[in-house]
Image 1: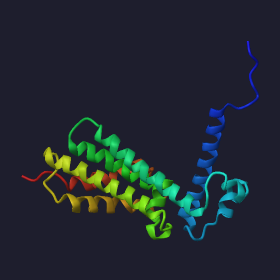
Image 2: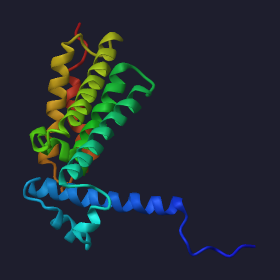
Image 3: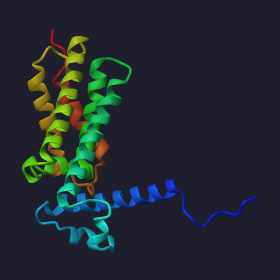
Image 4: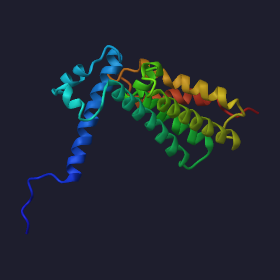
Length: 205
């Protein structure tokens, strides 16, 4: 029987690197949300983790890349939610509701809040195209879910574009006012908000 090796495998090293990178991003996104992007320095982020700014540069090139990674994580969470909703059984209304609840929950979590609180003008010109492309994908995913629900008659025949604007606008705001330390958990807030919104989509006689 071989003795256990004291040396980490390549897979273990990569897992450790990803965990450290995730820790940097999580610390940064919380500071961006609390202080704002311009009022946060990488020195602040490093100090919160007990590391040097030089260590951050092992994982991310600069503050703009840190912000781009943070908003990309939030946007990808929304895209994953749309993909999961489309695979749900049931009618279009059910799938739309499932997506909207998850949409609201993401916007109340760290990375989703960063998307809501950060305008694309804060990003560098090089980073803006990716950010805007992901935002368009999410808008298109929401519109498709609304279209499907209209097509199967589970919601009213409405203006899909305006409905998407109204739903997204309403569910973006919790990213600004929701308090994670408050009495109501994010899932409950999302459920209550979406129930109110979706009731306005009921089919008309």
